[in-house]
Image (cartoon, rainbow, N blue to C red):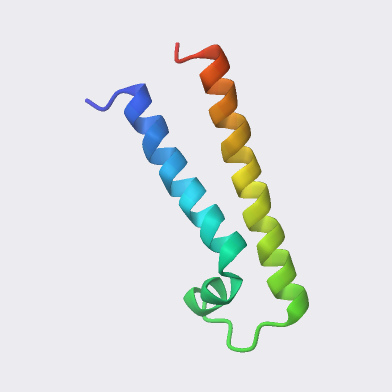
Length: 70
């Protein structure tokens, strides 16, 4: 069986990884989702989505560090 700590680490890697890609490389995200000509507004929106994902991962990690696994 997979423990809670292992599952949490896997989820942090998955969501944090996608958040980092969305925030750092919005053009790559457009290519992955097959958007041919991304507008500057769309690239800005993708960066915002990545920043929100990274913030959620950070707050969740901080919460688990303070409260602990139960």
